[in-house]
Length: 349
Image 1 (tube, rainbow, N blue to C red):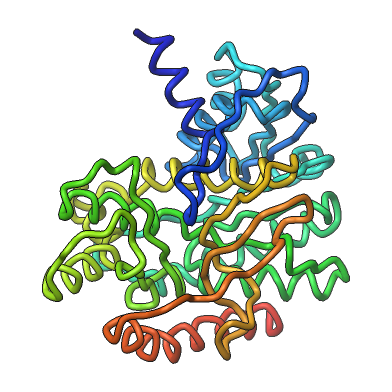
Image 2: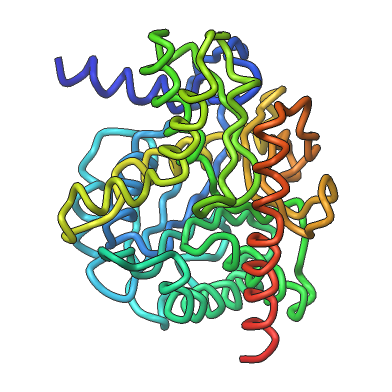
């Protein structure tokens, strides 16, 4: 039974995760044919970091797994290192070991920072998490400037622009290699849509565009597959639930946590997509918050094709319903403020 569960998780991580093509060719990898890939998780002892470390250990595309945090990582590393999968695990702790954790990394996933507490908006997290992200990105620019950087630390709408500014100052910025992980919005939209439409969730695709907070999250249910005849009221309710998904979890945990497990799953799905892109798997498409010119904003989440250099193509929004057009108009000013706040923080401090 346990072996079957592990096999199911691994196959989910290395089969199609495409937002646009649910029928992407599934591949079964033998370890000897897979390139060596190092993944570093920064913030690996935290609420997201620990389950993310577990999920990355289960991914057969990972050959080295570096777990870093300010404390507690040796225990997490020892724990997951006993799992009988391909990757070698090492735990690193404290600023003096950050270099070792990062050197040689192909993908760096950053869930570091403090979680939301009841009554706390994503904006309240800003000063603490922005400072953490800034220092970690300065280290990335020194020790693994060519790695794909997957930003989970909130508020993503601001932390991605902060990272971009840090990399620009260091002379290492490559817009194709910096991603805000918005996959949890996609995961939620798929789950909620499947429940309402009464279709198998494994078959569902829903693009989610915009940003990664509140009304900046815009699920495009008009483009959802398989098609379902949902009423306007149902679409509005699904949109609101997707936007408020984080708050739903914070309230359900009664102040004792936030969306850590689902976020770890979403982070593992996106990191897997990045690895597949690096390895040359064709037609890997996921939604992500990246440098973009599809709106007037410098960063925007939309479908992105992933390849050997990171972003191969930032894809357009496609046809929008009137409700979605209105949502887009509403979100742009708010997202603009968050982006500018990140840029200002990076340049002032």
